[in-house]
Image (cartoon, rainbow, N blue to C red; front, side):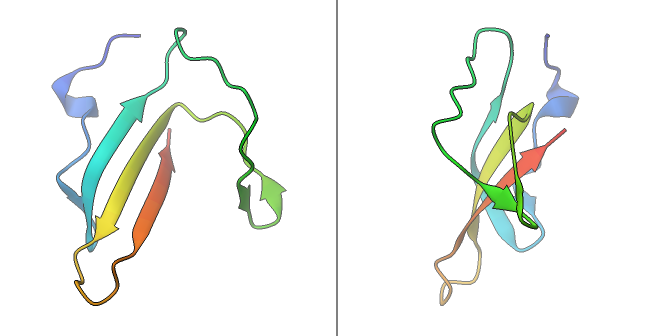
Length: 68
């Protein structure tokens, strides 16, 4: 699947700066080695991921966003 410039995430999402992102395509193999639960449900493979860092310097929090 080709991506266009419209697929690139914005520089910030909410109060968080996007520091990395990836598009999952056929060249990526889902290994299921890491486990992430959302509302007590195991999250499987996702088509896109963004890693963000809080703009609030006091928090120093990171946020992982799974996108469709």
